[in-house]
Image (tube, rainbow, N blue to C red):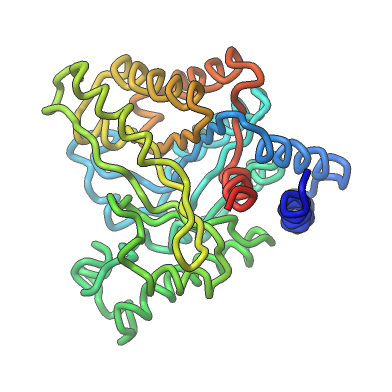
Length: 347
């Protein structure tokens, strides 16, 4: 190992010890358990494995459980019991497979009378990131584009500028989680994905760094989709696999790390395309195989509020866990902090 490599490894260990301490405090894990978890993260980050992430956004989704259901646009954080139960069971299954599941929560989740279900998830070592307080569009320049809730009730912005409202909404989520759970969020994901990520939004990147985030998940690469209820052709499926190249992590000029979301999302498949589950599983399998063959990153993006309706038997998560298991040492299921650590080590 050369001097530069040793320096990179030392920097990673410093970062990892901070993460270990935060994990131990947040989850109540013993020092030995937290250290073992962190060593597992380090091993994956420093390896040439494919890094497979399973990420679930904790929010309600319009058009689920029925196409006519749209009021969730105004109540994104009002999670129903089915969504909570699905999240807990998904976390349990991923943990049993030797991996971690990375969640992203909207802040209004913490207004609920009980967050014991989310405490259980944290205690198992699964990180929870910031998804803003009200599921806002962080690139908005007008109140109309900010969020449905503020279109209907603009007085909630308290005369803030749109830019200040965005910052306030992100900060409010962090404060809510820290207050209710005793631990800050791990990472930031923008509501909605952008084809170019935040490349054209240096002010948003600067704001996120100022708020303490060193990585963001904002980019969702474009790809072909089908007309509603049409089985995806080989051309559509190939387009989704080809898009994985543009879903690989990178560093913005100012140092903020981008960890893109990998297509196709459950919303893209089941809301836009109105696919059958088998079609979705076929697409996931093909993209996973590409990632494993190319030692790449695959960041599965889904929403428990959608999955409990379209995939009640957890077949998507089961497929990912089983595919990684069969890959042996060629792949590992990790959280996005591990992905960021690899990017830092190769920067």
